Image (cartoon, rainbow, N blue to C red; front, side, top):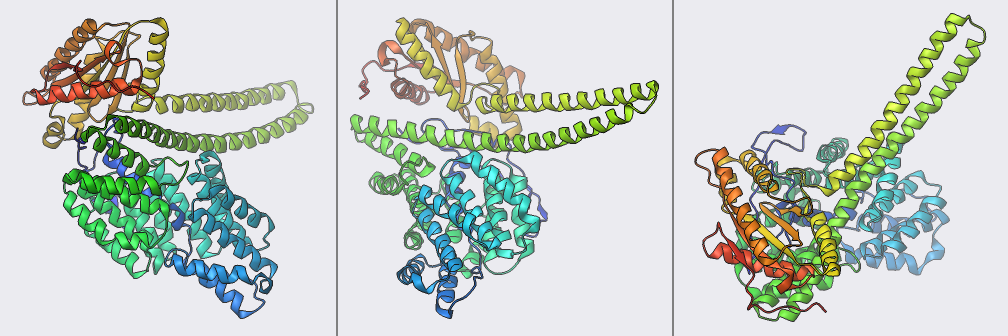
Length: 628
């Protein structure tokens, strides 16, 4: 089975590094999610950006510390300046400092502790790094060092999936920012703010903080770091293509600054773009040319991401052997207990390779690992977005509490004045009091309604209003277990719109979105309240029919196929809409969701191969994979 390609992205109006706007068409289909065997361009972009966050926290110059002798001061400054540009020399310098602790003052020892905390985080030991940095923040008398330690803790909390704590501490640091005068410390917190806000889709906030970084210091390595953040944010939301000259300018700026991490992060956008455009050879050339430089960083998150890109490029080129080699390297190099897109990509490719080789046992094992990694990653994205919204609401709630206390104080003052005024004046003050309490009640109601809205948005697809992929899979698995306990049959149907990419390419994404919405409405007319309907990603949908035998599922799928064809009557005359269907039931495939997905995916592909616009049932002769 081959990997299906996602639609390409158009460019749009994006900010240059000087803050001005560049006009070009803007992509509108940014909310697409993954089906179990496909990566969207936006998801790949998140893979390419997430691992660079730690290095954005690093200042261009070392922190000033009270000297006791020249050598320790110089070594500390040297180590601080080498963290990203030369990891090997950084380790050697740290060894010298650790071997002679007696030469350091108490504050210099805390500075060394800060560098050790960074070193632990660099190697993936997040819990130990956070503990070390928190102690520095508590014990140091240097406000700049305390601030920098706090910013690095925010970064490690985010990497360690403690998202609510990360956003809460980031908010505290941003509130302190107006009082911080150290340029490097200011750049640190603005860098992590730009990165984190970009990861939860707050691209305007992300670009704003990157612009502030660039304006405060438009020279040296800061041009590389801030420029990379701006390009990353624009690329994520589809407003700029890597073929734009600004990407090459960004690479050159980072090369000049001797920042291999940032240089290769921008290159990765270009490689990802080549993959989306169906040019794996160009991606391989770019990735292989810089593979040694990436390996020299000794940073596992970066190396794993680079290997996963190479694995995907070789797979698309048809070189299964090299694809397997780099996928296994990405899997081996992934950080323990951490769900990332490189891990998910590696498991997905190894599943496809094993399946192509006929090793169904290995294929099932890799598919299960892929499903677990993919679910863990998407759960992390949802948790991160929800954490941002929760902290945002908490900040608003604290502000509301302060306002409430102020109003209560005003009420007490009014009550004292009421005792000294006439009855008519008292009535006026009571009216004012009731209005104030009504205002507080209104804000409380709106706050609660916002929280409920965020919970709903986390479950539903923003374009069509049906379940998103994550919650469809969760609901379907629960319903299948209920059907198993009740000893009733159930059927799973996959729907993939035929030639939908041509609709987007010829008529634009706005028409494509309208077609998707009309298809969903047409299907809803033929569904029961107990049926589970979800969008798996792009133009692919899934429906679970509980308490339905094979014949009933086929008949209902045929109804849906005709309903989708009828959508063509309500849109432009030159747009013909049809869909291919794959059907599998628990009678043949069992009640395990992974097993049903394997069989129904094969049936869907058979519909595609046999001419599309048809319903195909999972082949009864195909091997049944037993769950271990």
